[in-house]
Length: 113
Length: 115
Image (tube, rainbow over all chains, first blue to last red; front, side):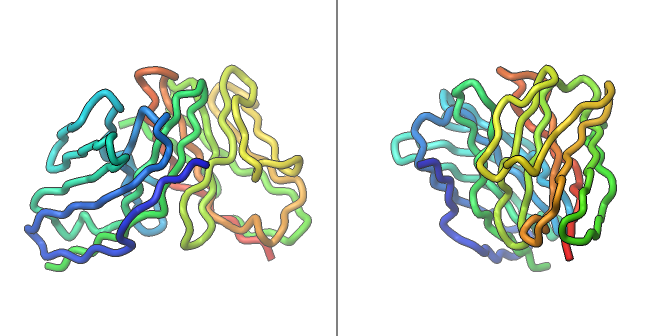
């Protein structure tokens, strides 16, 4: 069945460190992936996306890597700041003609000053 | 920057009562969605809506649920007879296109508490 899972429920880092959040997905038919950030009491906020025909995509301080061979997705945050503290979800869309997002369970990132 | 808005932010209701959650998607978006998040759990898809009809729905979206776009701006989720297990955060989302613009932008959510 469809599943998107995260390896680590909580990641604690020091301010200024680089953070890496991982995600495993099981549906090889998925062709579009999104990372969302969710702060307490708020809705998921789009961070960055990547298509299955890409291996890497960079944004401002964030990079997403996609390894289709092992069905693994990662989010790298450079120079992590206290404001980056949140729960991070990966989500996938299987391009079957619909746009249902399948979310992973989430990783909580804690950034200490 | 355009954003999805939702009202109310919080809703408390008695079991068996009807509730209507409201959303205003981003104005040029064509696809609309409802998701829910039970406390401490992941976000779950409920339903997608396009061209005034449901595109896809999950097993959660049973006959107690309905969606409507009553005018050109609002998108609503109705729960006819609420159950205790309907207590959750409900998020509305919208996206611009189907292909090439799949990114779904989420509203701040409505926290529903069923007593």
